[in-house]
Picture 1 (cartoon, one colour):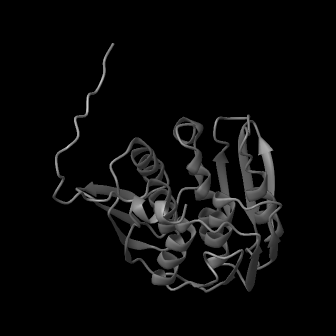
Picture 2 (cartoon, one colour):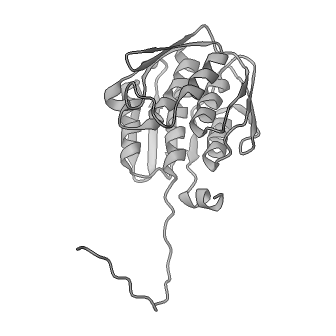
Picture 3 (cartoon, helix red, strand yellow):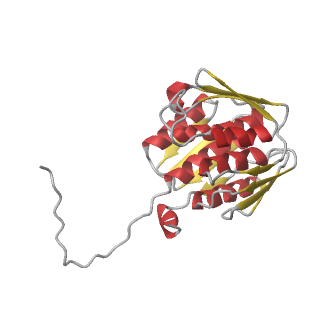
Amino acid sequence: MDKMAIVGGTKLTGEVRASGAKNSALALIFASLLAEGKHCLKNVPRLKDIESACLLMNALGCKTEHKAHELYIEVPQKLETLAHYDIVRKMRASILCLGPLLAREKNAKVSLPGGCAIGARPINLHLEALGQMNATMELESGYVVSQTAGLKGAQIIFDFPTVGGTENVMMAASLADGETIIENAAKEPEIVDLANYLLAMGARVEGAGTSTVKVIGVNKLKATEHTVIPIASKWEHC
């Protein structure tokens, strides 16, 4: 049997670099879809989920380049709107492209993570919330097919806090017409990190990290750079 033996009694010195938080980085990657131009995300870990997110971004028309711990994302003026199952199936966070695509292109066809089976962590809260923001939602052969004449601000009350749902609504609301209030919002550090990135792009967000988040939609966001919070930031909030 393989085993690891650790012998104590030796004083430890030196520094260890804290990697960027994966879950936060994934939300930021998809948030970049909201603004045309070249984004730079720093402290992005090299993980399979990050690679999968970049594959999806490329399929949506973006150009991505991961150098050391910096991820460069060039977002075009016109985005593709199909998130194919072959890519989305690899990562649940892929559903986070739905809000930005609706906000930018007013339509999206996004595969359900895992195909038709919604699973133990349902995305119905995402779909219901975006539906309240003037988007139609239909499930067709394992895909969410959505359209809108223009997203509008709404009061969203989640049945229970959902990180992904809160993120999707925050991103969509950033370019929606009017004010969106998210009640029973998730409070995790990645929500605050996303809000800070959106603010740097020119969004109007208040209350991130509390149970009530307010987003006032703006006409346009700009590309920017942002440093992903380290994993330690998540532990400190546990």
